[in-house]
Image (cartoon, rainbow, N blue to C red; front, side, top):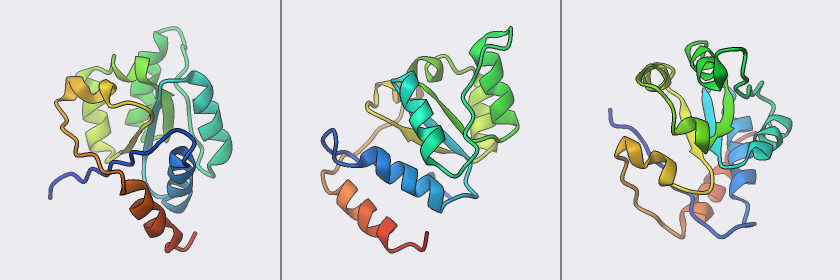
Amino acid sequence: MGEKITVVDSVMGSGKTSWAIDYMNAHYDENILYITPYLGETERIKERTIKDIKCPRNLGEGKLGNILELLRSQEDIASTHALFLKLTEECKEAIKEGHYTLFLDETIAAVEPYGCKFLFSALALERASSSLSSMAL
């Protein structure tokens, strides 16, 4: 089966991050990898979800070593674009093996090294919001 890509593209302040948080809370059984350009935004994700979101820390081998451990343990993770761009092949393989749902906040520039192509739709947020509101939370 092919991989599913959903793009939610809308203006700042329209509720994209709130939708992502609602989605994470409604899909407790999914492994989550939330990537944002801002370190402070990782804390917002941790605080607003019911999941036990982990943020990579430097435990002596840098954050890259810690994110690999978190991925291999299939932890839910919030991190930054800067670290995402440094992911090793081992990290990428752990993401695939863990069947992670990736949330990429703010820009697609961080996925360019992975050769992803996206189709954007201004109606994606409206459709996604309608789908989410019909789910039992």
